[in-house]
Image (cartoon, rainbow, N blue to C red; front, side):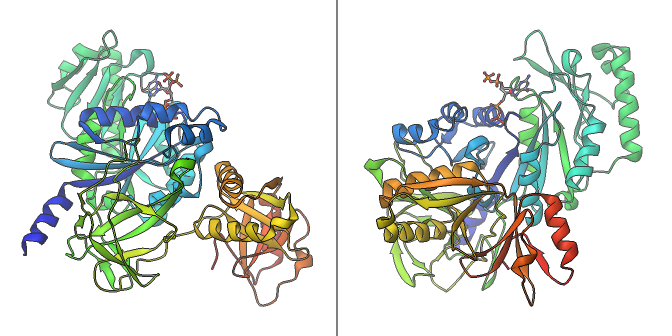
Length: 526
Ligand code: G4P
Protein backbone atom coordinates (compact mmCIF):
# COMPACT_ATOMS: atom_id res chain seq x y z
CA UNK A 1 0.00 0.00 0.00
CA UNK A 2 1.29 3.44 -0.89
CA UNK A 3 1.65 6.16 1.70
CA UNK A 4 -1.36 7.96 0.25
CA UNK A 5 -3.47 4.83 0.35
CA UNK A 6 -2.56 4.31 3.99
CA UNK A 7 -3.53 7.86 4.75
CA UNK A 8 -6.80 7.48 2.87
CA UNK A 9 -7.60 4.25 4.66
CA UNK A 10 -7.05 5.89 8.07
CA UNK A 11 -9.16 8.91 7.18
CA UNK A 12 -11.95 6.83 5.64
CA UNK A 13 -12.10 4.51 8.66
CA UNK A 14 -12.61 7.53 10.89
CA UNK A 15 -15.45 9.08 8.94
CA UNK A 16 -19.21 8.79 9.21
CA UNK A 17 -21.44 10.89 6.96
CA UNK A 18 -25.14 10.84 7.71
CA UNK A 19 -28.37 12.80 7.54
CA UNK A 20 -31.06 13.11 10.17
CA UNK A 21 -34.52 12.47 8.75
CA UNK A 22 -37.60 13.50 10.64
CA UNK A 23 -40.85 15.40 10.61
CA UNK A 24 -40.75 19.01 11.85
CA UNK A 25 -40.79 19.33 15.65
CA UNK A 26 -39.59 15.81 16.35
CA UNK A 27 -36.45 17.39 17.82
CA UNK A 28 -33.87 17.38 15.02
CA UNK A 29 -32.44 20.75 15.96
CA UNK A 30 -32.20 19.71 19.58
CA UNK A 31 -30.59 16.36 18.79
CA UNK A 32 -28.12 17.98 16.40
CA UNK A 33 -27.11 20.47 19.07
CA UNK A 34 -26.54 17.72 21.61
CA UNK A 35 -24.48 15.69 19.18
CA UNK A 36 -22.36 18.70 18.37
CA UNK A 37 -21.79 19.31 22.05
CA UNK A 38 -20.23 15.89 22.49
CA UNK A 39 -17.59 16.63 19.98
CA UNK A 40 -16.04 20.05 19.98
CA UNK A 41 -17.80 21.08 16.81
CA UNK A 42 -15.08 22.16 14.51
CA UNK A 43 -17.11 23.23 11.58
CA UNK A 44 -20.60 24.52 12.05
CA UNK A 45 -22.87 25.95 9.47
CA UNK A 46 -23.78 29.02 11.43
CA UNK A 47 -25.35 28.20 14.71
CA UNK A 48 -28.01 25.57 14.88
CA UNK A 49 -30.17 27.89 16.95
CA UNK A 50 -29.94 30.64 14.39
CA UNK A 51 -31.19 28.35 11.71
CA UNK A 52 -34.00 27.24 13.89
CA UNK A 53 -35.27 30.79 14.07
CA UNK A 54 -35.79 30.71 10.34
CA UNK A 55 -38.34 27.97 10.40
CA UNK A 56 -41.22 29.92 11.81
CA UNK A 57 -42.04 32.22 8.94
CA UNK A 58 -41.47 31.65 5.28
CA UNK A 59 -40.83 35.26 4.49
CA UNK A 60 -38.01 35.30 7.00
CA UNK A 61 -36.10 33.01 4.79
CA UNK A 62 -35.02 35.57 2.26
CA UNK A 63 -34.35 38.14 4.95
CA UNK A 64 -32.11 35.73 6.74
CA UNK A 65 -30.31 34.85 3.56
CA UNK A 66 -29.72 38.51 2.96
CA UNK A 67 -28.67 39.45 6.44
CA UNK A 68 -26.32 36.60 6.95
CA UNK A 69 -25.14 36.37 3.39
CA UNK A 70 -25.22 32.65 3.70
CA UNK A 71 -27.48 29.81 3.08
CA UNK A 72 -29.78 28.80 5.85
CA UNK A 73 -31.43 26.19 3.74
CA UNK A 74 -28.46 23.91 3.54
CA UNK A 75 -25.56 23.04 5.63
CA UNK A 76 -23.05 20.49 6.61
CA UNK A 77 -21.80 20.17 10.13
CA UNK A 78 -18.59 18.48 11.01
CA UNK A 79 -17.27 17.41 14.38
CA UNK A 80 -14.85 14.99 15.97
CA UNK A 81 -15.76 12.47 18.63
CA UNK A 82 -13.66 9.66 20.07
CA UNK A 83 -11.37 9.46 17.10
CA UNK A 84 -14.17 9.74 14.55
CA UNK A 85 -14.85 12.57 12.17
CA UNK A 86 -18.56 13.03 11.71
CA UNK A 87 -20.34 14.88 8.92
CA UNK A 88 -24.01 15.65 9.52
CA UNK A 89 -25.89 16.66 6.43
CA UNK A 90 -28.79 18.88 7.23
CA UNK A 91 -32.10 18.06 5.61
CA UNK A 92 -34.21 21.16 6.01
CA UNK A 93 -37.79 20.73 7.04
CA UNK A 94 -40.84 23.00 7.19
CA UNK A 95 -41.02 25.57 4.44
CA UNK A 96 -37.39 24.87 3.61
CA UNK A 97 -38.28 21.46 2.27
CA UNK A 98 -37.32 21.07 -1.36
CA UNK A 99 -35.94 18.66 -3.90
CA UNK A 100 -32.52 19.54 -2.52
CA UNK A 101 -33.54 17.86 0.70
CA UNK A 102 -33.94 14.60 -1.17
CA UNK A 103 -30.76 15.03 -3.16
CA UNK A 104 -28.79 15.68 -0.02
CA UNK A 105 -29.68 12.18 1.09
CA UNK A 106 -27.71 10.78 -1.84
CA UNK A 107 -24.58 12.21 -0.25
CA UNK A 108 -25.16 10.38 3.04
CA UNK A 109 -23.95 6.88 3.82
CA UNK A 110 -26.56 6.32 6.49
CA UNK A 111 -29.50 8.08 8.07
CA UNK A 112 -30.77 8.69 11.55
CA UNK A 113 -34.55 8.60 11.67
CA UNK A 114 -35.90 10.68 14.51
CA UNK A 115 -39.40 9.92 15.74
CA UNK A 116 -41.53 11.67 18.33
CA UNK A 117 -42.68 9.07 20.86
CA UNK A 118 -46.20 10.51 20.89
CA UNK A 119 -46.60 11.10 17.18
CA UNK A 120 -44.87 8.12 15.67
CA UNK A 121 -44.05 7.94 11.96
CA UNK A 122 -45.16 11.22 10.34
CA UNK A 123 -45.56 12.40 6.74
CA UNK A 124 -42.18 13.98 6.10
CA UNK A 125 -40.38 11.11 7.75
CA UNK A 126 -42.11 8.72 5.38
CA UNK A 127 -41.02 10.68 2.31
CA UNK A 128 -37.42 10.96 3.43
CA UNK A 129 -37.33 7.35 4.55
CA UNK A 130 -38.46 6.19 1.12
CA UNK A 131 -35.59 8.01 -0.56
CA UNK A 132 -33.13 6.36 1.82
CA UNK A 133 -34.78 2.97 1.42
CA UNK A 134 -34.46 3.16 -2.37
CA UNK A 135 -30.72 3.53 -1.94
CA UNK A 136 -30.66 0.76 0.64
CA UNK A 137 -28.67 2.76 3.16
CA UNK A 138 -28.70 1.78 6.84
CA UNK A 139 -31.23 3.62 8.99
CA UNK A 140 -30.89 4.10 12.72
CA UNK A 141 -33.95 5.12 14.69
CA UNK A 142 -34.01 7.43 17.69
CA UNK A 143 -37.38 7.63 19.46
CA UNK A 144 -37.38 11.05 21.09
CA UNK A 145 -39.26 12.81 23.90
CA UNK A 146 -39.39 9.79 26.17
CA UNK A 147 -39.92 12.22 29.06
CA UNK A 148 -43.38 12.90 27.66
CA UNK A 149 -46.40 10.67 27.62
CA UNK A 150 -46.29 8.74 24.40
CA UNK A 151 -47.18 5.56 22.62
CA UNK A 152 -46.00 2.15 23.65
CA UNK A 153 -42.70 1.04 22.12
CA UNK A 154 -44.39 -2.06 20.68
CA UNK A 155 -46.94 0.13 19.02
CA UNK A 156 -44.22 2.29 17.47
CA UNK A 157 -42.28 -0.74 16.24
CA UNK A 158 -45.42 -2.07 14.63
CA UNK A 159 -46.01 1.26 12.94
CA UNK A 160 -42.44 1.39 11.65
CA UNK A 161 -42.94 -2.01 10.09
CA UNK A 162 -46.43 -1.36 8.73
CA UNK A 163 -45.85 2.12 7.36
CA UNK A 164 -42.19 1.99 6.37
CA UNK A 165 -41.81 -1.70 5.69
CA UNK A 166 -38.67 -2.16 7.76
CA UNK A 167 -38.17 -4.51 10.70
CA UNK A 168 -36.75 -3.02 13.87
CA UNK A 169 -34.60 -4.16 16.74
CA UNK A 170 -34.69 -2.19 19.99
CA UNK A 171 -31.18 -1.62 21.27
CA UNK A 172 -32.50 -0.27 24.54
CA UNK A 173 -35.92 -0.27 26.16
CA UNK A 174 -37.69 2.32 28.29
CA UNK A 175 -38.29 1.69 31.97
CA UNK A 176 -41.46 3.65 32.55
CA UNK A 177 -42.39 6.61 30.42
CA UNK A 178 -43.48 10.21 30.58
CA UNK A 179 -43.61 11.43 34.15
CA UNK A 180 -42.71 7.97 35.38
CA UNK A 181 -39.67 7.62 33.16
CA UNK A 182 -37.02 5.94 35.23
CA UNK A 183 -34.44 5.13 32.59
CA UNK A 184 -33.63 2.78 29.76
CA UNK A 185 -32.32 -0.75 29.79
CA UNK A 186 -29.45 -1.28 27.36
CA UNK A 187 -30.06 -4.70 25.81
CA UNK A 188 -26.62 -4.94 24.25
CA UNK A 189 -24.53 -4.02 27.26
CA UNK A 190 -26.90 -5.20 30.00
CA UNK A 191 -26.90 -1.98 31.87
CA UNK A 192 -29.42 0.53 33.06
CA UNK A 193 -29.14 4.18 32.28
CA UNK A 194 -31.00 6.10 34.89
CA UNK A 195 -32.97 9.17 34.01
CA UNK A 196 -33.04 11.45 36.97
CA UNK A 197 -36.08 13.55 36.83
CA UNK A 198 -35.18 15.89 39.64
CA UNK A 199 -31.87 16.80 38.07
CA UNK A 200 -31.99 16.23 34.33
CA UNK A 201 -28.34 16.82 33.80
CA UNK A 202 -27.16 13.84 35.83
CA UNK A 203 -27.32 10.51 34.21
CA UNK A 204 -26.14 7.44 36.01
CA UNK A 205 -25.25 4.15 34.43
CA UNK A 206 -25.59 0.92 36.42
CA UNK A 207 -24.21 -2.38 35.24
CA UNK A 208 -26.59 -5.28 35.91
CA UNK A 209 -26.61 -9.05 35.34
CA UNK A 210 -29.61 -8.96 33.04
CA UNK A 211 -33.05 -7.42 33.06
CA UNK A 212 -34.16 -9.66 35.92
CA UNK A 213 -31.50 -8.21 38.20
CA UNK A 214 -33.10 -7.10 41.52
CA UNK A 215 -31.00 -3.93 41.38
CA UNK A 216 -33.44 -2.69 38.73
CA UNK A 217 -36.34 -3.48 41.04
CA UNK A 218 -34.76 -1.40 43.77
CA UNK A 219 -34.33 1.50 41.41
CA UNK A 220 -37.53 1.39 39.40
CA UNK A 221 -39.98 -0.24 41.77
CA UNK A 222 -41.86 -3.47 41.39
CA UNK A 223 -44.42 -2.34 38.87
CA UNK A 224 -42.01 -0.88 36.31
CA UNK A 225 -39.59 -3.75 36.72
CA UNK A 226 -42.30 -6.33 36.11
CA UNK A 227 -43.36 -4.45 33.04
CA UNK A 228 -39.77 -4.32 31.77
CA UNK A 229 -39.27 -8.05 32.30
CA UNK A 230 -42.49 -8.87 30.50
CA UNK A 231 -41.62 -6.65 27.55
CA UNK A 232 -38.09 -7.93 27.19
CA UNK A 233 -39.06 -11.58 27.53
CA UNK A 234 -41.50 -11.03 24.72
CA UNK A 235 -38.86 -9.29 22.63
CA UNK A 236 -36.32 -12.05 23.30
CA UNK A 237 -38.76 -14.64 22.05
CA UNK A 238 -40.69 -12.86 19.32
CA UNK A 239 -38.50 -9.90 18.32
CA UNK A 240 -35.86 -9.81 15.61
CA UNK A 241 -32.36 -10.51 16.85
CA UNK A 242 -29.71 -7.91 16.16
CA UNK A 243 -28.08 -8.65 12.81
CA UNK A 244 -25.46 -6.20 11.58
CA UNK A 245 -25.59 -7.48 8.04
CA UNK A 246 -29.30 -6.74 7.82
CA UNK A 247 -28.77 -3.32 9.40
CA UNK A 248 -26.15 -2.46 6.79
CA UNK A 249 -28.46 -3.54 3.99
CA UNK A 250 -31.21 -1.30 5.32
CA UNK A 251 -33.46 -4.26 6.17
CA UNK A 252 -33.43 -3.81 9.93
CA UNK A 253 -33.34 -0.58 11.89
CA UNK A 254 -31.77 -0.48 15.35
CA UNK A 255 -34.02 1.55 17.64
CA UNK A 256 -32.84 3.69 20.54
CA UNK A 257 -35.08 5.46 23.03
CA UNK A 258 -34.15 8.75 24.65
CA UNK A 259 -34.85 12.39 25.17
CA UNK A 260 -32.79 14.85 23.20
CA UNK A 261 -33.66 17.95 25.18
CA UNK A 262 -32.64 16.21 28.40
CA UNK A 263 -29.54 14.82 26.76
CA UNK A 264 -30.74 11.42 27.87
CA UNK A 265 -29.66 8.47 25.78
CA UNK A 266 -27.97 10.71 23.23
CA UNK A 267 -24.40 9.81 24.08
CA UNK A 268 -24.98 6.05 24.04
CA UNK A 269 -26.88 6.48 20.83
CA UNK A 270 -23.93 8.33 19.29
CA UNK A 271 -21.42 5.75 20.48
CA UNK A 272 -23.45 2.82 19.17
CA UNK A 273 -24.11 4.63 15.94
CA UNK A 274 -20.41 5.25 15.37
CA UNK A 275 -19.69 1.56 15.95
CA UNK A 276 -22.41 0.32 13.61
CA UNK A 277 -22.77 2.94 10.89
CA UNK A 278 -20.84 2.44 7.67
CA UNK A 279 -17.80 4.47 6.79
CA UNK A 280 -17.80 6.34 3.46
CA UNK A 281 -19.08 3.92 0.86
CA UNK A 282 -17.95 3.44 -2.72
CA UNK A 283 -20.14 4.97 -5.43
CA UNK A 284 -21.01 3.46 -8.78
CA UNK A 285 -19.78 5.09 -11.98
CA UNK A 286 -19.10 4.43 -15.64
CA UNK A 287 -15.84 2.85 -14.48
CA UNK A 288 -17.54 0.54 -12.00
CA UNK A 289 -17.54 1.06 -8.25
CA UNK A 290 -15.12 3.76 -7.11
CA UNK A 291 -13.61 2.86 -3.76
CA UNK A 292 -12.89 5.69 -1.32
CA UNK A 293 -9.27 4.58 -1.02
CA UNK A 294 -8.72 4.98 -4.74
CA UNK A 295 -5.79 7.43 -4.96
CA UNK A 296 -7.37 9.57 -7.64
CA UNK A 297 -9.58 12.30 -6.31
CA UNK A 298 -13.20 12.03 -7.48
CA UNK A 299 -16.52 13.49 -6.40
CA UNK A 300 -19.91 14.62 -7.59
CA UNK A 301 -22.08 17.67 -7.20
CA UNK A 302 -25.36 16.88 -5.44
CA UNK A 303 -26.66 20.34 -4.85
CA UNK A 304 -26.20 23.88 -6.05
CA UNK A 305 -27.00 26.74 -3.77
CA UNK A 306 -27.53 30.22 -5.09
CA UNK A 307 -26.45 32.95 -2.81
CA UNK A 308 -29.16 35.46 -2.20
CA UNK A 309 -26.85 38.17 -0.98
CA UNK A 310 -26.42 40.77 -3.73
CA UNK A 311 -22.88 41.35 -2.46
CA UNK A 312 -22.01 37.72 -3.14
CA UNK A 313 -23.91 36.87 -6.28
CA UNK A 314 -22.16 33.57 -6.55
CA UNK A 315 -23.29 30.04 -6.25
CA UNK A 316 -21.92 27.17 -4.29
CA UNK A 317 -21.78 23.69 -5.65
CA UNK A 318 -21.80 21.01 -2.95
CA UNK A 319 -19.46 18.19 -3.76
CA UNK A 320 -19.41 14.83 -2.05
CA UNK A 321 -15.87 13.48 -2.14
CA UNK A 322 -15.96 9.85 -3.25
CA UNK A 323 -12.27 8.95 -3.45
CA UNK A 324 -8.76 10.32 -3.05
CA UNK A 325 -7.50 13.31 -1.17
CA UNK A 326 -8.65 16.81 -1.80
CA UNK A 327 -6.02 19.52 -1.57
CA UNK A 328 -6.71 23.17 -2.01
CA UNK A 329 -5.61 24.49 -5.37
CA UNK A 330 -5.57 21.08 -7.02
CA UNK A 331 -6.60 20.71 -10.66
CA UNK A 332 -9.34 18.30 -11.57
CA UNK A 333 -11.27 17.47 -14.66
CA UNK A 334 -14.83 18.67 -14.95
CA UNK A 335 -15.98 15.73 -17.02
CA UNK A 336 -19.18 17.09 -18.60
CA UNK A 337 -17.50 20.37 -19.58
CA UNK A 338 -14.36 18.50 -20.69
CA UNK A 339 -12.19 21.07 -18.89
CA UNK A 340 -9.49 21.14 -16.26
CA UNK A 341 -10.48 23.37 -13.39
CA UNK A 342 -8.61 24.55 -10.34
CA UNK A 343 -10.27 24.12 -6.97
CA UNK A 344 -8.81 27.14 -5.30
CA UNK A 345 -11.39 28.49 -2.89
CA UNK A 346 -13.40 25.59 -1.62
CA UNK A 347 -15.41 25.92 1.54
CA UNK A 348 -15.99 23.01 3.75
CA UNK A 349 -19.09 24.58 5.15
CA UNK A 350 -21.18 27.64 4.89
CA UNK A 351 -20.67 30.11 7.65
CA UNK A 352 -20.36 33.78 7.95
CA UNK A 353 -16.59 33.76 7.81
CA UNK A 354 -16.52 31.22 5.02
CA UNK A 355 -13.60 29.13 6.13
CA UNK A 356 -11.41 27.84 3.39
CA UNK A 357 -10.61 24.20 3.50
CA UNK A 358 -7.08 23.00 2.85
CA UNK A 359 -7.67 19.29 2.63
CA UNK A 360 -10.55 16.87 2.79
CA UNK A 361 -11.20 13.17 2.37
CA UNK A 362 -13.87 10.77 1.12
CA UNK A 363 -17.15 11.25 2.96
CA UNK A 364 -16.50 14.97 3.38
CA UNK A 365 -18.57 17.60 1.64
CA UNK A 366 -16.96 20.68 0.20
CA UNK A 367 -18.61 23.79 -1.16
CA UNK A 368 -17.09 24.89 -4.46
CA UNK A 369 -17.36 28.44 -5.68
CA UNK A 370 -19.49 28.20 -8.80
CA UNK A 371 -19.40 30.89 -11.44
CA UNK A 372 -22.11 28.98 -13.29
CA UNK A 373 -20.15 25.99 -14.53
CA UNK A 374 -21.70 23.23 -12.46
CA UNK A 375 -24.90 21.29 -12.75
CA UNK A 376 -26.40 18.85 -10.34
CA UNK A 377 -24.89 15.44 -10.88
CA UNK A 378 -21.61 16.71 -12.39
CA UNK A 379 -18.57 14.54 -11.76
CA UNK A 380 -15.10 15.83 -11.05
CA UNK A 381 -12.10 13.59 -11.26
CA UNK A 382 -8.35 13.70 -11.19
CA UNK A 383 -7.27 11.78 -14.22
CA UNK A 384 -9.58 9.39 -16.03
CA UNK A 385 -13.10 9.90 -17.25
CA UNK A 386 -15.11 8.83 -14.26
CA UNK A 387 -18.76 9.73 -14.42
CA UNK A 388 -20.91 8.93 -11.40
CA UNK A 389 -24.41 7.65 -11.91
CA UNK A 390 -27.01 10.28 -12.43
CA UNK A 391 -28.72 11.59 -9.34
CA UNK A 392 -32.33 10.60 -9.04
CA UNK A 393 -35.10 13.07 -9.76
CA UNK A 394 -38.18 13.20 -7.59
CA UNK A 395 -41.82 13.32 -8.41
CA UNK A 396 -43.22 16.83 -7.96
CA UNK A 397 -46.23 17.23 -5.70
CA UNK A 398 -47.02 20.94 -5.94
CA UNK A 399 -47.78 22.71 -9.20
CA UNK A 400 -48.20 26.29 -10.33
CA UNK A 401 -48.85 28.01 -13.63
CA UNK A 402 -46.36 30.74 -14.46
CA UNK A 403 -47.07 33.95 -16.28
CA UNK A 404 -44.66 36.74 -17.03
CA UNK A 405 -45.87 40.16 -16.02
CA UNK A 406 -44.03 41.95 -18.82
CA UNK A 407 -44.30 40.11 -22.15
CA UNK A 408 -41.24 41.94 -23.49
CA UNK A 409 -39.06 40.07 -21.05
CA UNK A 410 -39.74 36.75 -22.70
CA UNK A 411 -36.14 36.07 -23.69
CA UNK A 412 -34.73 36.63 -20.21
CA UNK A 413 -37.59 34.61 -18.83
CA UNK A 414 -36.73 31.64 -21.03
CA UNK A 415 -33.08 31.93 -20.10
CA UNK A 416 -33.93 31.99 -16.40
CA UNK A 417 -36.25 29.01 -16.67
CA UNK A 418 -33.62 27.01 -18.57
CA UNK A 419 -30.92 27.83 -16.07
CA UNK A 420 -33.05 27.14 -13.02
CA UNK A 421 -34.32 23.83 -14.34
CA UNK A 422 -30.79 22.79 -15.17
CA UNK A 423 -29.73 23.61 -11.64
CA UNK A 424 -32.58 21.49 -10.36
CA UNK A 425 -34.37 24.36 -8.64
CA UNK A 426 -37.67 23.43 -10.29
CA UNK A 427 -39.12 21.07 -12.89
CA UNK A 428 -41.10 22.52 -15.77
CA UNK A 429 -43.94 21.19 -17.88
CA UNK A 430 -45.88 22.59 -20.81
CA UNK A 431 -49.55 22.09 -21.51
CA UNK A 432 -50.24 20.49 -24.87
CA UNK A 433 -52.70 22.99 -26.25
CA UNK A 434 -51.49 26.44 -25.25
CA UNK A 435 -47.96 25.66 -24.18
CA UNK A 436 -48.64 27.18 -20.79
CA UNK A 437 -45.72 26.74 -18.47
CA UNK A 438 -46.34 24.75 -15.30
CA UNK A 439 -43.79 24.44 -12.53
CA UNK A 440 -43.54 21.29 -10.46
CA UNK A 441 -41.81 21.14 -7.09
CA UNK A 442 -41.73 19.04 -3.94
CA UNK A 443 -41.68 21.95 -1.50
CA UNK A 444 -43.21 25.43 -1.41
CA UNK A 445 -39.77 26.96 -0.91
CA UNK A 446 -38.84 26.07 -4.47
CA UNK A 447 -41.60 28.36 -5.80
CA UNK A 448 -40.31 31.20 -3.67
CA UNK A 449 -36.74 30.66 -4.76
CA UNK A 450 -37.88 30.61 -8.39
CA UNK A 451 -39.84 33.84 -8.07
CA UNK A 452 -37.08 35.56 -6.20
CA UNK A 453 -34.26 34.50 -8.48
CA UNK A 454 -36.17 35.28 -11.68
CA UNK A 455 -36.50 38.82 -10.43
CA UNK A 456 -33.07 39.23 -8.85
CA UNK A 457 -31.00 37.50 -11.51
CA UNK A 458 -32.98 37.85 -14.72
CA UNK A 459 -35.04 40.97 -14.04
CA UNK A 460 -38.27 39.14 -14.75
CA UNK A 461 -41.34 39.41 -12.58
CA UNK A 462 -43.43 36.29 -12.68
CA UNK A 463 -46.80 35.41 -11.31
CA UNK A 464 -47.45 31.97 -9.94
CA UNK A 465 -50.92 30.55 -9.77
CA UNK A 466 -51.23 27.38 -7.74
CA UNK A 467 -52.89 24.47 -9.51
CA UNK A 468 -54.86 21.71 -7.81
CA UNK A 469 -52.66 18.81 -8.99
CA UNK A 470 -50.90 16.58 -6.49
CA UNK A 471 -49.26 13.85 -8.52
CA UNK A 472 -47.21 13.66 -11.71
CA UNK A 473 -46.83 10.42 -13.64
CA UNK A 474 -44.71 9.98 -16.75
CA UNK A 475 -46.62 7.81 -19.20
CA UNK A 476 -45.01 5.32 -21.46
CA UNK A 477 -47.46 4.04 -24.04
CA UNK A 478 -47.56 3.43 -27.79
CA UNK A 479 -50.43 5.75 -28.33
CA UNK A 480 -51.38 8.55 -26.01
CA UNK A 481 -54.84 10.02 -26.21
CA UNK A 482 -55.05 13.42 -24.47
CA UNK A 483 -58.85 13.21 -24.30
CA UNK A 484 -58.46 10.41 -21.78
CA UNK A 485 -56.85 12.73 -19.30
CA UNK A 486 -59.35 15.46 -18.75
CA UNK A 487 -61.19 14.55 -15.56
CA UNK A 488 -59.28 15.82 -12.55
CA UNK A 489 -56.12 15.53 -14.58
CA UNK A 490 -54.26 17.08 -17.49
CA UNK A 491 -51.71 15.92 -20.01
CA UNK A 492 -48.48 17.91 -20.28
CA UNK A 493 -44.96 17.45 -21.60
CA UNK A 494 -41.68 17.76 -19.76
CA UNK A 495 -38.58 19.47 -21.14
CA UNK A 496 -37.56 16.38 -23.05
CA UNK A 497 -41.01 16.10 -24.65
CA UNK A 498 -42.00 13.14 -22.52
CA UNK A 499 -45.71 12.87 -21.77
CA UNK A 500 -46.68 13.46 -18.18
CA UNK A 501 -50.14 13.42 -16.60
CA UNK A 502 -50.87 15.63 -13.63
CA UNK A 503 -53.56 14.31 -11.32
CA UNK A 504 -55.63 16.16 -8.76
CA UNK A 505 -56.01 13.19 -6.48
CA UNK A 506 -55.13 9.59 -6.01
CA UNK A 507 -58.56 8.43 -7.14
CA UNK A 508 -58.17 10.12 -10.53
CA UNK A 509 -54.74 8.55 -10.86
CA UNK A 510 -55.94 5.05 -10.01
CA UNK A 511 -58.86 5.37 -12.42
CA UNK A 512 -56.53 6.45 -15.25
CA UNK A 513 -54.26 3.50 -14.52
CA UNK A 514 -57.19 1.09 -14.59
CA UNK A 515 -58.44 2.51 -17.87
CA UNK A 516 -55.03 2.35 -19.54
CA UNK A 517 -53.75 -1.09 -18.63
CA UNK A 518 -51.10 -1.14 -21.35
CA UNK A 519 -49.51 2.14 -20.30
CA UNK A 520 -46.81 2.50 -17.71
CA UNK A 521 -47.17 5.30 -15.19
CA UNK A 522 -43.77 6.26 -13.80
CA UNK A 523 -43.08 8.51 -10.82
CA UNK A 524 -40.12 10.16 -12.50
CA UNK A 525 -38.87 10.66 -16.05
CA UNK A 526 -37.99 7.39 -17.83
P1 G4P B 1 -37.13 20.15 14.86
O1 G4P B 1 -35.77 20.72 14.62
O2 G4P B 1 -37.22 18.70 14.54
O3 G4P B 1 -38.24 20.93 14.26
O4 G4P B 1 -37.42 20.15 16.43
P2 G4P B 1 -36.75 20.99 17.60
O5 G4P B 1 -35.42 20.45 17.94
O6 G4P B 1 -36.87 22.43 17.29
O7 G4P B 1 -37.73 20.57 18.78
C1 G4P B 1 -39.11 20.84 18.74
C2 G4P B 1 -39.64 21.02 20.14
O8 G4P B 1 -39.49 19.79 20.85
C3 G4P B 1 -38.85 22.05 20.93
O9 G4P B 1 -39.75 22.67 21.81
C4 G4P B 1 -37.90 21.19 21.72
O10 G4P B 1 -37.45 21.81 22.91
C5 G4P B 1 -38.76 20.00 22.03
N1 G4P B 1 -38.00 18.79 22.36
C6 G4P B 1 -36.92 18.28 21.71
N2 G4P B 1 -36.51 17.14 22.32
C7 G4P B 1 -37.35 16.92 23.35
C8 G4P B 1 -37.43 15.91 24.36
O11 G4P B 1 -36.66 14.98 24.43
N3 G4P B 1 -38.45 16.04 25.26
C9 G4P B 1 -39.34 17.07 25.22
N4 G4P B 1 -40.29 17.10 26.13
N5 G4P B 1 -39.28 18.04 24.29
C10 G4P B 1 -38.29 17.97 23.37
P3 G4P B 1 -40.36 24.09 21.53
O12 G4P B 1 -41.19 24.45 22.69
O13 G4P B 1 -41.03 24.10 20.16
O14 G4P B 1 -39.11 25.00 21.35
P4 G4P B 1 -38.16 25.57 22.49
O15 G4P B 1 -38.74 26.89 22.78
O16 G4P B 1 -38.25 24.62 23.64
O17 G4P B 1 -36.82 25.61 21.86
